[in-house]
Image (cartoon, rainbow, N blue to C red; front, top):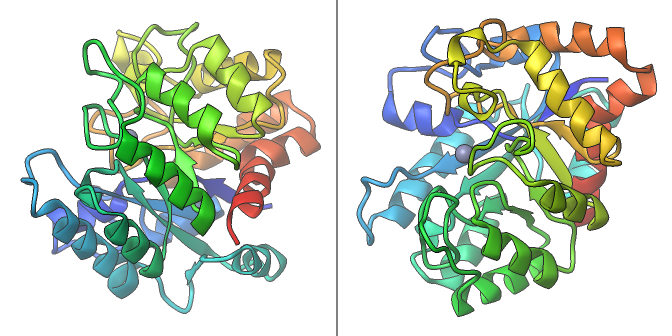
Length: 312
Ligand SMILES: [Zn+2]
């Protein structure tokens, strides 16, 4: 079974550094096609993250430029775009490699449902509602005194449900998290978040949030972001990921936990999980501690189930 990873920022990296090629291994790129092949990554979600420095009025344009890169420089005869449940099945049954397009943070919508539908028509199949800060949909986890979803945010959830888009609550502050779980008619995911009980960071999920995601049929993707694990960042290794994995399983999450590396969104890395090709280290450790059936769930089956449920 090939790996399904639900979050990377390679599109933003390729947008910032036009000289990089996705098909050429480069130490500046943590996810590239050659590294996907080396680690047997079968499906990769590519998030378009528009940086906060881009002004309102130009955010949608920046997202379009990243989507252009996805179509022009990322997908290929060797890496098929996944838009539907059938594409997902084709990818798995034929052992093909697949790419799924997301937007990270709803700020590029610039308060327009037309923009949301346009992104969908361009192939976007999931969206994180916020990044760390406030936008027109919800408040990010680093805002003081955060509120829940805005009126526009509620319309966005409804529209995403209608279109069959994955709703991603990583980065969303708690009130918005709870509103989203209450409103969404389809399971909700946290594509790249960790366990707050093990490390108190605002990007990590509290036990009640993890339990609610499990209850909703959603999935939590554990990230490889060192500062979500400890303050002493230099010593983080694959063992730390396994601690978080064990913890989610102990809350009843064996069918609801997987991985969303956040490669290319990370500046300092783990000691060992430094780029996509190093996924093999995690796979080896998983096989030492879990049954084959469990390892399959963590590496792909849990994501496949929830994406099959939501995509149309
Ligand atoms: Zn992120």
